[in-house]
Structures are given as structure tokens and as C-alpha cells.
Length: 394
Image (tube, rainbow, N blue to C red; front, side, top):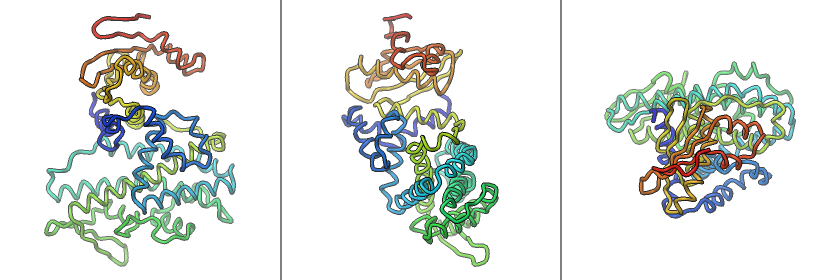
């Protein structure tokens, strides 16, 4: 497995509890019920959820669960959601146009996020000077390169509710500090965009990180911020990590609100919003989450001579033959993300034994993608191989 794929897919176990639930005895049916029960309250029309595959919804289930566990993050998410829904009601066509205008910037912002994730290294053994430098480097780049775009897009969407909406060029040229102030003024909530419990605005955390306004003294990280009136805060090593975690939760609130808004209002937005190209890291993480939602852990992803192969390890004690066939269905999902000549799934039992290899041809996957055939048709043309003997060859 390449390093970037390993970091992306291994993050599912590290940052969610999906696989652990299956290890405790959950079934796919119970997982689906849990995911839907969590997401239904987030949609005005919960019937919309029937359109989407449970694997796609699984990422938002994990995000929503984490967001709702922290009150200020939950309130931030709720406010973002209210802003979007109210603006859409106020002027549906303009709202869709504004959302479309920001699609490519959002794509770029997510690319910055995944670059940061791919380059992340364990900091446990770093001395505090190097530790603080690296964490604040990440904080500064995440706010500058990712969160800032979401904030500008949200400000632009919110301006629909004003007597005169703002232009894209105007919003795009605003400084981060101005965006924070204008958005808080429009919403009518001071400290709306501050990380809690420190009460420091996002733009000031960006400044600390971008300008490395930190000094190490007596195992404390001393941070300075503010252009005219200088402020100071001292943080322990553990508190610096808490700041980073709070920032990633805030990012999750903005991103998840944006994603659920698009899922909920696809019909109203589709006339203007055409989607955008996503990074491979993003797509493979979604693939790993989808697999985990069904009790499979992605152990490896290999590319060789025109074939992409994903190794899926079962974490359940359920019937091996049924689970192997279930795992094989992810071959199409793998092809969708890799677009290789062939896509293969290797199913490994919970005991670590390679049991089945299922290979799909691109030409067959394309017939499903183009709507010529139903997804279930692939079961008739897939090449199944039970190790070490072949059982079908088509």
C-alpha cells in the first residue's frame, strides 16, 4: 500500500468507531439503523436519505456524532445550517448561483486539507519547540487554506438575506478578519467564530500560526496576537493539542453543514452546481468508510499492470461465504475511484485467511455507470476465485 493510501484508510479505525461496533457484534442492518437514526433529525425531509447509499452517509454520521458531543461546535453547526436554509428560502436561484460560484474554491480548500492530512506525522517524541512549531504550522495553514474559504462562502450565502447581497469578487478579496467580523455582525452573535473555551477568534489563531507568534518558556507555549492591542495566552503541550482538536471540530462543523445542505437540497442546487473533482485521498477515505460501514477494514490498496486491488478484512464472525460475496460488491466502488482496466477485491476472513478474489472488468463497470445495466448485473460477469481454486471464470 502506498503511504498516502495507508494514512487515509487507516484513519477510519483511528478516528471513528465503525469497525469497533462490528467487532462488538453489530450487523449491517443495525449499523444502517444507527446511521439513519442519527441523520434523520438533520434533514427537514428525511425521505431524501433514501436516495443515498449508506456508505456515503456513513461519513456524515461519524461527523454529526462528534459535532453533537461538544456544545459550542454543535451550536456552530446549527447556526451554519440555519444560515444556508434561510438563504435558500429567501432566494433559491441566487443561493444556488452563489454555491456554484464557490465550488472550485471549496475543492481547492479540501485539497489543502488532504495535503495536510497526508503529510501528518506522529509528534509524540518531538521536543516541545518542534512540537509547537509543527502544530501551529498546521493550524495556520488549515485556517488560511481551508476554513477561510468555507467562511467566505458562508458570508456570501448569508448576504442573500440582506437588502443588497454581496458580490463574489467583493467577498473573495476580503481579509479573514473582515470576514469574521462581517459574518458575526450579520448573524448578530458576537464570538460566533471563536474557538472555545479560549474565546480567541479564528483569524487570530491563523495569525498566531502563520506568523509563528510563539515563544517557549518553562515548558509553556506563549502565544501573542492582536495588531494594536497585544494579547497573550500561555498553553501547555496538552492544551496546544486541544486547540488543534477544537479547530478540526470547527472545520468539521462547517464542512458537514455544507455537505448536508447539498445532500438535502440537491434538486434546488443542481441547475447551477456541477460538482468538482476530488482528491484521490478524499475518494479513498470515502471508500474505506463505506467498507467499514459494512464491517470490512481496508488493509491494502495495490496498483499493478492496469488493475486496482483492495484487500478487505472482515471484522465480523458472520457467514464467510455470504460476507465474501458482500465484500466483492465493493469492486465497482473501487473502479469508480481508480478507473483502471480491472478492479479486484480480495476478501480476508477475520482469522486472517485470504478466501476470495473477485475481479471486474472496466468495460462491464462502464455499462453500469452509463445506465445500460443495473449494479446487480455485475454479479453475473465478475470473475470469482476462491483461494486456491477457481469457481467461476467469465
